[in-house]
Length: 255
Image 1 (tube, rainbow, N blue to C red):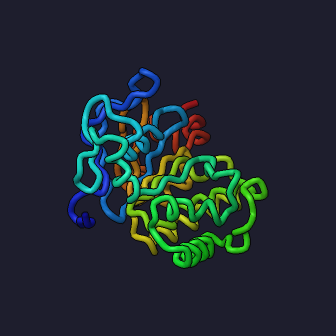
Image 2 (image 1 turned 90 degrees about the vertical axis):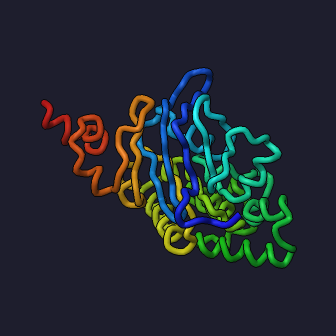
């Protein structure tokens, strides 16, 4: 299956998503085009990450459908989903590296697991993506020897290794100091320019959202209350949006 420039890479159609028996997102519709970076913005605990689980097929919508490059994945089995997931990469909030493997082994894991390349090709690709994230010299280190920011960069390299068409990020700057946050933001910007993948970023970091997004969806109390460009959201008058984007000035004005 090849990418289409006219159909969405990801489409959630009127989906209700539940977690722990409770509905957390209600009748949401979302389209992400090939090459688009979509940021899902909102406070912690509103169910943003469940959208990533639905895209991966880990979480089935209670109502509605999920389509990846036009294919309805809603009712696919775990075995059938493997084919779809090979086209995606997920960067988890904590990096989710394998502690028992070196950096190089972590990065090459999916290439080896799915037989995507030969030994020499794998070595070349590992070096290439570690160069991309600026960690070529860390290839033989173990995750325990890395800082939080380095772990995130290794996780990006691991995701990038199989050339995914869809890149999913769960809170990529959470828990990072300003310098490491900047480094991760710059890596995502480079991904946007060089890889042309569809990128979905879940975050509560307003600054990163405004910098990285082509378009932003904002979640509030289980619903999407905004969708538009970073410029558009900064001019929104909705009190729920204003108070989240700039709480200090908002509450000064209110008081």
